[in-house]
Amino acid sequence: MSSPSSWDAVHVLAEPTRRRVFNSVREADGPVTRDAVAVDLAITRRLAAFHLDLLADAGLLAVDYARPAGRGGPGAGRPAKRYRPTAVDIVVSLPARRYDVAARILAQAIDQSGGGDARVTAVEVAHAEGERVGKLRRPRGRMSMPSSLTATTAILSDLGYEPRDEGGCVRLRNCPFHAVVDVATELVCGVNESFIGGVLCGLGAPRSVKAALDGVPPDCCVTVARR
Image 1 (spheres, rainbow, N blue to C red):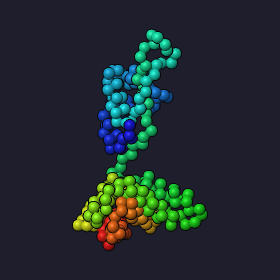
Image 2: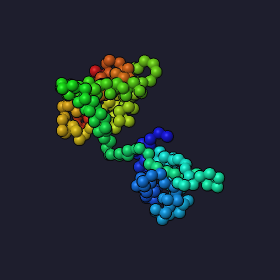
Image 3: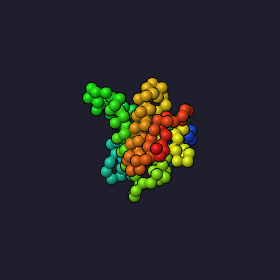
Image 4: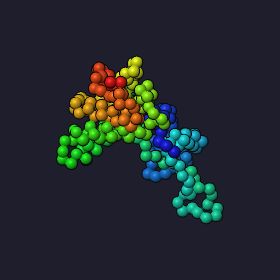
């Protein structure tokens, strides 16, 4: 089962009893049964099973089956259904922030710079990362200017930029790297421009469609348009 989105996970965990059930499983030393959760939370076995299965369906818990230790062979009964937490991180912020993307780019830049200028390497790595994302979302066929802007808008929307197409110029109403911009504005804005330029390259957008550092505060520093 694929990992749940943070928003889906938040909705699933919004119900108080379900959240207690989830925490009970996470705090256990190993896989637990519905009986163990019911005893831990002083709820019925049926209610525990109901919430456990919803959490499993949402990808927040994994399921296996096993007999209790020391019980086996004929007459041992059916294996019990057990639950354990999955390796999933749940992060939600409003507006959206993607510091994981910035961290990935900067970590690679430091690793690849070889003692050289990590700032230059960061811009190169950002372009490569953006190009990788663009290729993953590249549709079949040749890209026109309008289709390039549409595809770029969809990608940047998924990344939290809150893009808005204003008659052929895509303005980004949110910077997913907001906190680190204050620390190193020139570096982060350059990385941002290069990343979005890489997305365009990966999509196969016409050369006339470019990212540029001409955003107007409080919008993101980058816009995408025909230049």
